[in-house]
Length: 274
Image 1: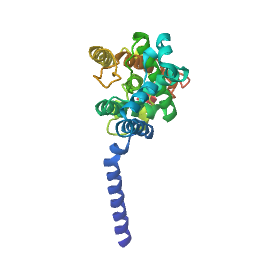
Image 2 (image 1 turned 60 degrees about the vertical axis):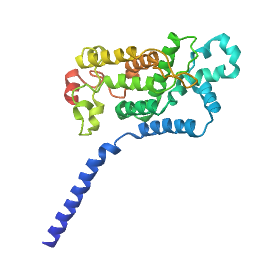
Image 3 (image 1 turned 180 degrees about the horizontal axis):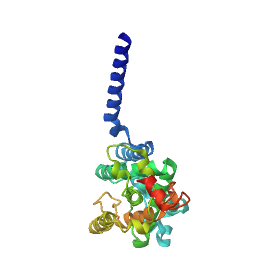
Image 4 (image 1 turned 45 degrees about the vertical axis):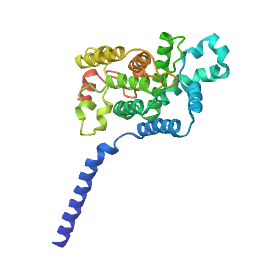
């Protein structure tokens, strides 16, 4: 009788612990890579706010923000080493680590948590990081193509986050995908085979998402953050560049075999996914 009572007490304690873990899970369920990215962004902004002088902060922007005019030969002759080869290379992605103010950082942080999380769970940390760099560079390239001589620097992780949104769109709408497992934290939901892009673009939910996303980016106008701390504008070209790169480059990073690729018939794959 005593042994049975002890077993019942033990089971009860285990149930309580599991219940507590389940309740706490949504708070601690963000992948480490996403938390680390967010921490880096916050630390950089804290240093800019509390450590650097205004002059030093301006120098930081000159060295690490993406400035299209840097690639103009006449400008390069005037500004010297900040238009040298090294800054021309690293600013294609270093700009994504800098933000204009806490509101800018906070909004990007929320979207990073929302869309970076499914990407890490599907790609893994290293591919997530490479994808972050690629989409940042694509965003900078798109902005450079449309604002060749602009002096205003582009900063912020929005291009990479836009790439995460596009990549997530390739699999979250799938049956048994992440949207169908909200609240259950099913790891397999992030491993469902992705449909071909043509098939994805036939989904009315995807088309609605695209219409809203592109419409908002175009509506909110052109530009970037002014170097003197003036009005902050949205570099919508960079957003679109990152988004398109994420949409098209997804298969190059995706570790999950697509439907009908080397894993049996489409019907068999569909059964495993559903």
